[in-house]
Structures are given as C-alpha cells and as structure tokens.
Length: 293
Image 1 (tube, one colour):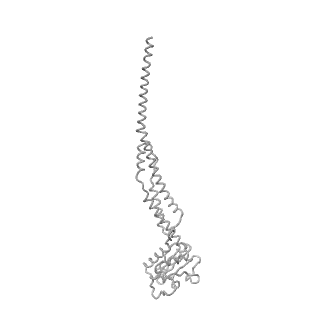
Image 2 (cartoon, rainbow, N blue to C red; image 1 turned 90 degrees about the vertical axis):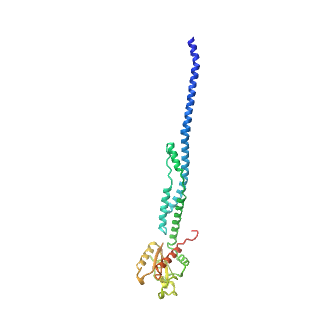
Image 3 (cartoon, helix red, strand yellow; image 1 turned 30 degrees about the vertical axis):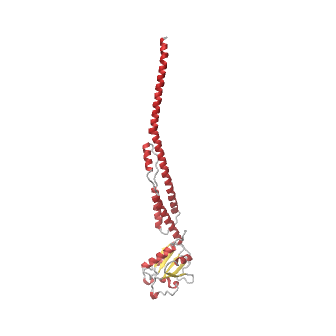
C-alpha cells in the first residue's frame, strides 16, 4: 500500500508544478505579445496612419490644383484662337508645368521604416500658390486675347467708327458707301465689308493733302483707313496686295497691318515711327474690351 500512498502524495505536487510552468509560460507569451505590439505592431500602425494622413493632405492639394489644370486645358481644347499667339503658348507651358508640379503619392511601402520615410517625404512643405497664380494669369491672358480677336473679327462699321472717335488726333471719320467707295470693293466677293477713312492731325502732306476735303476724297494720304473683311484669308490677301506697293514712291500706299480680319492703314506722309505709333493706338482702341467682359 505504501507505493500507492506515495503516488497519491506526489500527484498534487506535480499538478502544482504543471500549473506553475503553464502560468510562467502564459506570462512569457503575454510578455512576448506585449513586446511585439509595443515595438513592432504599434510603431507600424502609427507609421501607416501617418502615411495615410500625409497622403490625404497631398491628395487634397493635388486635386485642387488639378481642377485648375483641367479648366485651363479645356480652354485650350476648345480651339479658340487668340489675337496674340504667345498667350496660347504661355498657357500651354503653364499647364504642363503645373502638371509636373503635382507631388506624386507612392504606394505604401511594406516595412515600417520605409513607410515612415515615405510619410516624412509627403509631409515636406507643399505650396501650390505660385503655380496656381501662374496658371491663373496665363488663363486670363489667353481668355482676354481670345475675346480681343473676336472683337476685331468682322466687326461692324458702327463699331469701327465709334472706336476711331476715341483716338487722339483722328477726325472726319467717314465710312464709304457703294456710291462713293474709291476702290469699288464694298461688299463684293473678297472685298471689304466696311472701309472707314479719317484725317489725322499728324499728317503734313503739304500741297498734296488738302485737309479741307472730305477724308474719303483724300484717301489714306490724309490720315488713314480701316478696312474690314469677312475672313482672315481675305484680309491677308488684301494686305499682300498693298505690300506690293511698299517703297514705290508715289505708288506707296502707306503702312498696313492686319488685326484679325481688319487692316489698319496709315498715311505714307507719316514717318515710320508715326505710322507705328498711330497703328498701335488704333489697334489698342479696337481691341480694348468693355468693362465687365
């Protein structure tokens, strides 16, 4: 019986030892899990969260700039032509530069250290204000130039007359009619739809220019003329014809510049600088946009 009694006595002791080791094992496992969480899982989760927040902030700024880029690109895609082609080129460059300025958001890396590095890079200062301003300025300049071209594309006779009246030194503004048109081209195929002659105070043609005569009778010698055509092709064809007389003495018809479908002509009695100055003034008046446009 003594052997049985010894086994019964030893059994509770073994049980306690087993429970002890199990407890120690559980505590060790908990400690390992806690360490893994504190030193691996928690830092990784923080890195992921930091990356997501940084990516979200960059994405919001990118989206705002992208809206501006898309609007500018749509203006270009419409195919409207500007008076000054340089404004179209400038807007094209601004759109391209703005697209390149967008900060790239990478895929989230796998390792904690790489995620932290990526989040840090995304958190670098990001300010699109200068890019946005350049894009806005280029868009406004292009839009203005498009509207200016529209204003000098087959404008009405009344528009030309009203605008010429604002040019200093210009007087006796007289549009031609079919009965007094010196070139007999009014409303004919390829001809002008309006021709408005005027005197200019800067002209000194001596005896060759009788300022007392109506501006149509004197012709461009007394100041100049604004000719309006239906198309750019018609205007350029007429301009080429006028150019064939340049520098031919008494046959010289004076300066001539195409502006949309309009030709601004000035007297050959003006000096080159006077011709350029007057042409620039007239061009500025004809392309001046009304307030609110």
